[in-house]
Length: 223
Image (cartoon, rainbow, N blue to C red; front, top):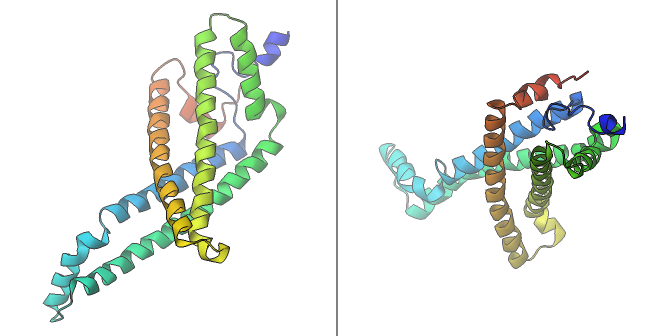
């Protein structure tokens, strides 16, 4: 009876679990906001890269009979980059809100749906050394990766807010540059996580764990 209670909701696979409405909404919201944030970085580093657009600005103005220097053209192209960074900042506020809301959701989740409970139950099943030991070990590793994701997201939010409000917080130029470097490096870890996550979901959807995506839509209401 105790084993049945521990494994409730994960009999067929530890990855096919019930998800509350709030978790499902949060999951898709973080996916959309994080994806949009990454896209703004991609656009600014390619299409709106100021130095790559100097010649374009000069040529466009030249057609209108206006001649500008490279520095003047650079200043113009940076204005477009700044507009996209403003969008990036707004998305950063959204990530900060979603991160804070995830903590609140976790505190109000039913006991059996809390991350801590699910990890504890999976560890108990793993220690039983039954036929699913490898699968539960994989499940625990995935959950550890999610914990790392939350940590990276927290650091990205904190460093991002530090860049926005650094002047008000009294950041020196050196501290600002350090925070900017850390923020920039963290994005690469996030890219790796997203790639691993999407790859894992794709593999699972083509294996016996099929139903993870639909579960994040309908909740995987298990009886």
